[in-house]
Image (cartoon, rainbow, N blue to C red; front, top):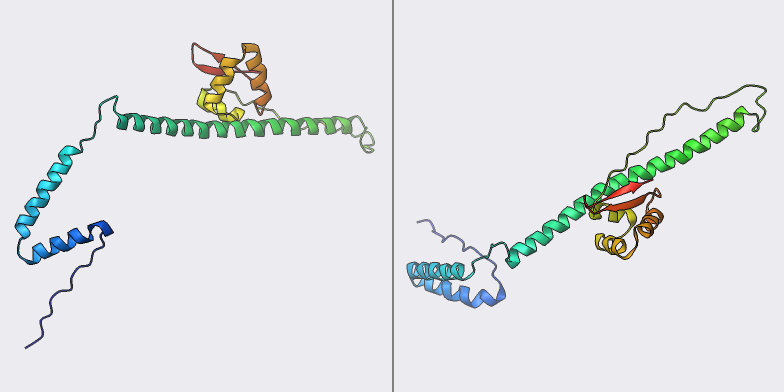
Length: 192
């Protein structure tokens, strides 16, 4: 007659504080009280669910926390978009400097000041420069461009006169663009 082995027991991990409870539950199960045990657990879980309702009314703490997280996420996304704009504007500024240098060298070559050209005239590279159009910005998108937090930007705007704010923003902007606050639209407009 072949040996019939009982199936291996399933091992589960439980937190240390629950070890005693799991042992008692296991003992009750071995004694045949499984149905009563399951009913008691269902009642316990039902009571637990009833006592832990989540308040999802408009002014609740949970909803406010979710709104704060959403605002942080939106400002992070806006900051990422403005960093791309800032990088493009910085590249455009560097291209302007390179173009001026090439133009200076080309005009110096054409007039014979550099080297001996023996009458050969060179013309500057016919490069048509395209300007990056700056768009009005919100607190969240302008603040990273100026190297400040959105709250800091609002504080600077409120503590300075309009003229002082223009000068301050021009000094902080990577392309020396001044920014003017428009209260009607709630946006900062670029001033070249």
